[in-house]
Amino acid sequence: MDEKISLEAIAIYSDSYAEKMLKKSFADKERISGQEILVFSDVQQINLFIIRDLFKAWREEIRKLKSPFFNYENEEVKEALDTFMNVLSKNISVDRAHFAPLLKKAVSQTLLVIFNPYDYFSVIISGANSKIQVESFREDLKYLRINKAPLEKLLQHFDEKKIKELSGNEAFAMLDHILEEVNFTPEDVDGYISRFSTIEPLDPEQFYVKKPDPIQPVKQEKTEKSSIHDSLVSQPKPTLADNFRKIDRIKDRLTINQKFMFTKVLFHGDFELFSKAIDDLDRLDDMPAALKYLERLYDEWDRESEEFHEFMEMVEKRFS
Image 1 (cartoon, rainbow, N blue to C red):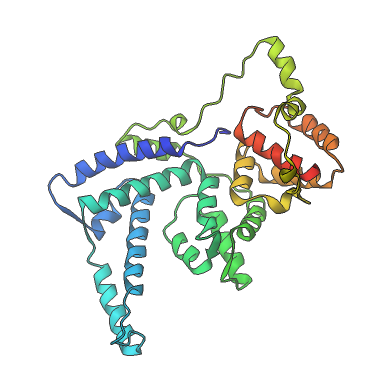
Image 2 (image 1 turned 90 degrees about the horizontal axis):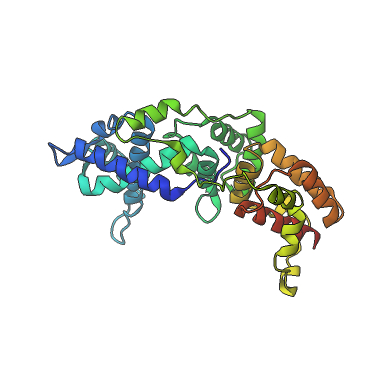
């Protein structure tokens, strides 16, 4: 699908699914154990995301163990703490109130990685402060089962190059090539739809922002044929301050989210097609040449979409 995914729609479904699962699971008990979480949902990815977040909380608690009176860096102390934490990890016990937000987050992320893996890739690659810590990335991958192949390949590249930390944009550039190499195709969603629907009926169409009906009067069709140029003419002209933001190459200024967004909405999920278009535009000399190129190859774009206007803004900055 080319439509933009609605995180709000995913959140609404996740809340409904979670509430039904909570009611079913906590009907005759007050707490849930680690072993019960592992088999909590028929969608195994949900269970694994919950376990992942529990272990993140576990590691955070370890980091908080600091004292001006005791040496937590002593080898014997560290060994004893490791033993203690390993025992503790086998004794997970969560009440409903604390389990509910973990479940809702896990359902939302599972739906995202199933129905829009590119957006999920963007989230996981962005990392904290637009930087990716390779060891944290490695830990996250241990709990991912769906559409995992490109990210595994990315981790392999990190290890081969002995990278410990890098910017999100650098990681995306590497992933961009990987997606072409492995010819990535997202997993079939039918089985997941069936499993989710046993708890809460799921229609994937509800997760996407609907586009206007493309059927228009003949007069409107004539307007659309020249609308790439016309839409730019009709928009407010850049100010003097805007002109100082001229860019040398579009390719160097795209953010992670923009790359995924443009690829998904404007280039039908084809990274190779997207990359070629950006390279071609960066080689052109002026705006008329860019418009001619886009009119020739991408006349079917939805000129009313946010993605189209944001993409054309980047093109304008390149040739302003």
